[in-house]
Length: 111
Length: 114
View 1 (cartoon, chains in turn purple, blue):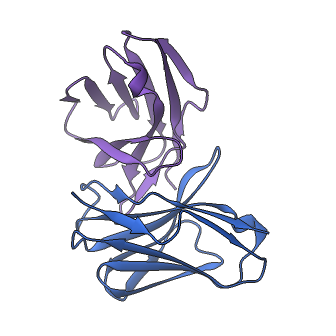
View 2 (view 1 turned 90 degrees about the vertical axis):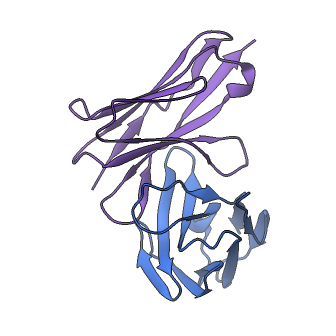
C-alpha cells in the first residue's frame, strides 16, 4: 500500500523566511497530490492540488512542486507569518476514490 | 460556502455502548468519508461512500460500520465501543469521480471511550 512520509518533527522558522515542508511517498506515483492545512482542534482545510504532469503550482505565497522521479513533493510558504503556524498535511490518491494522508508536519513561525 | 457539520464536538461513552456519529453536508456532494486521527498516525480512512446506500471499506474498518440513507448524511457507527476507539473522528465530503477534487472537512468529534 502507499506509504507517505512527512517530517514528524516541528519546523521552526523566523517570520519573513521561507518555510519548506517535504512529502515523500513510496510505491506508485499518484495522479494527484494535495496539501491541506490543519489548525489545532479543527478539520483540515484544502490548500493546493498538483497533478503528476505539473512540476509546480503557485497560489499567492504558496508553492508546491511535484517530482515523480524522486517521489517527492515540496511545499513552500514564502514571507512566512505567525498566522501560518499550523500542521500541514499532504495527501495522495490511492487509485480508488479515496486519498491517503500523511501524518503532517507542524510549522511554527516565530515573530 | 461548503459546510460539513458533525453532530457533536465532544462525546464520552462507556465501553460496550453503541455510538452513532452523524455527518451532514450541504453541497450535494456524492462522496463522503470518515477518518480517525491519532497523534503520530495522521488521518486514517475508515469508510467512504460514493453514492447513497453505497459504501467501501477504508484502511481500518474493523469495529465500525456506516450508513448512507440520504445523500447529505453519512453516519459512522461503533457497534460496541472500545477504549482503543478513543480518537478524533473527522468527516469529509467531495465532488464525485476521482480524487482530483478537494475534500471539505467537518470540525471533528473528539470521542472518549471509558
